[in-house]
Image 1 (tube, one colour):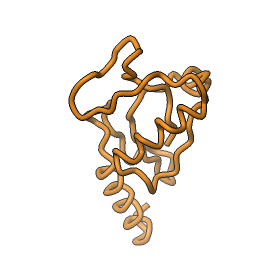
Image 2 (cartoon, helix red, strand yellow):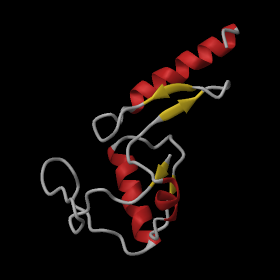
Image 3 (tube, helix red, strand yellow):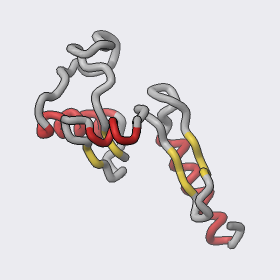
Length: 112
């Protein structure tokens, strides 16, 4: 997973200021972004997913025109085995996990 720019910091163009979302300010250093990314990973219970954090200059996000909260599984054949919906409502790590298990079962049986 790659953690990119915060979508809803309270000092951003589209803040979230209520509900269960934590109130965060837009990080101004990469170290601050790493702390926010850790909060996100903990809140979403994604501790076991290796995560890279885009630096505060947003180089990765800009280079790849990244959209937040999308999960994909690419099969050994190079085809998309699972495509999650746009976030935050389409961000379903449990569905990705199920797709990974299904893909591994097929691989063990020799179906792929």
